[in-house]
Length: 302
Image: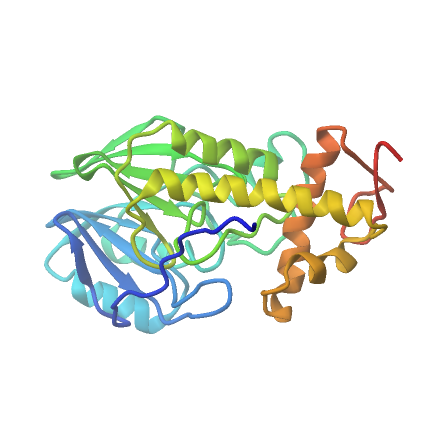
């Protein structure tokens, strides 16, 4: 039986409107719906008066103007970036200019891979460089709030979650979303790191997740376990495809993703490639080189 992930698809929101979702947290949803962003990017505001903004979002004039208007009379003191995809970090620049607020992030796009010599293709927000480099476990304090940095590479190598200590709430970016699994696309995406990051969340005591796309996840531990089980199930599907003589990822994806919109198959191919690399690292699968979605893959027992 396929792993059932208890997705949360429905929630009430209005574009360009800053809505209160908890005593210390407000959210504004950007008008950038897509197959990758669900209803759009959720920009979070922590605190009141002197506030932090988590994931300012894409460079959409309506979103930036509405957020600026909604925070008139308040001061942005921190801009926190979970990662540098184009729907998350670009709007940091105009907010920084308006409020002179410093940005905080693990590093530029690909920062978690470049240091080890892995080349990263363009496609993220290549202009973003955080004013403050942050590390796992680092605490950031503001006016009435405290945030712990939780490094969760996998979706990207510079992905950072932020834990609001006062509410035991974790802003999960794209690491854990309520409406979908995350795309893990090599070389910056890394399935082994992603699985380790999921296991890391299981060891924490957060009570609620606020993902950048979609609404809150409240029964967090079973949800994370379902994500882990789903990825392990995908690995078993890959092994079954190989056992049936399917040696190329484009031939596997339609068999594995029977309920997925075919327009999403290219993204699915990238996630399968990441899972395949993990299986290669484990010694279960071998491949023609260089490893890519065009490679032929074989079980090592063959």
